Amino acid sequence: MEDHLSLTFQALADPTRRAMLARLSKGEASVTDLAKPFLKNMSLPAVTKHLKVLEKAGLITKTREAQWRPCRINAAPLKDASDWMEVYREFWEESFDRLDEYLKKLKAEKKTKGKKDGKK
Amino acid sequence: MEDHLSLTFQALADPTRRAMLARLSKGEASVTDLAKPFLKNMSLPAVTKHLKVLEKAGLITKTREAQWRPCRINAAPLKDASDWMEVYREFWEESFDRLDEYLKKLKAEKKTKGKKDGKK
DNA sequence: CTTATAATTAACTATGTGGTTAAATAACCA
DNA sequence: TGGTTATTTAACCACATAGTTAATTATAAG
Image 1 (cartoon, rainbow over the protein chains, first blue to last red):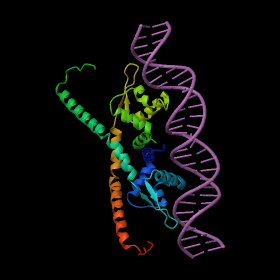
Image 2: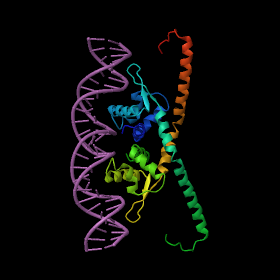
Image 3: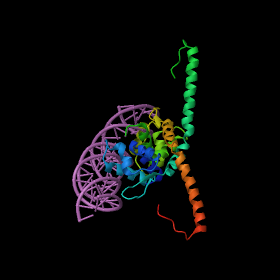
């Protein structure tokens, strides 16, 4: 799993890490800050590991300030991921169209009910 | 890893699976069709497994037609993923702004060089 | 120099992932 | 019935992931 996009998606495939990014979108935070919401569920080393995953994916940068390691979000890799997905937008929009069509058909059938539908 | 979004990102975190989605965006394809580009690198059962991952994430649907299992893309989960990312758009756009600022600053500093900067 | 706080590293465990080969199942074809 | 094609399942393996506890490093503050 060496390619950038895989690394990014892999990093995003965990709710803890996504929550950390959400927190960092509100501003810089130390490891302890970031850990706080999770310490009921996991240890500090586990947090460190999640941060390492995010760091390796380039989604955060860690700096040094006294004994703290303030982290900041770096959304650049998200742009690539978003660009990749954009190609498929037409498909999910199309599926809304289909839903729309379906709803219209349902409505039409209501007015014609009594008519048996032949099995496809 | 039970939540939907994690499942989606996890499924996307593999180049083989992304390539399969790309293929399916060109239209319905059987397992063998989908496997063709990869059979130099992996066996058919490996392909089946990748398809299972995509299926579990709801990114494809498999139907039955004689001995074939035609697969179709279902981009709906990509919409959720895309919506999730959209929140961060401002950050990757901002980082372009920062790059711009940085370049301007560099240019400005060239003209003022020799001046010592105080530590923050 | 000692202690306290912040964070990481080490060593270990359980489970998941991505691959394999060999065998089984499913549906068609003759 | 038997053979061919398409696909899946089973059993296995190597390695990655996500977590643990205990020990270690780094910095600051008495």
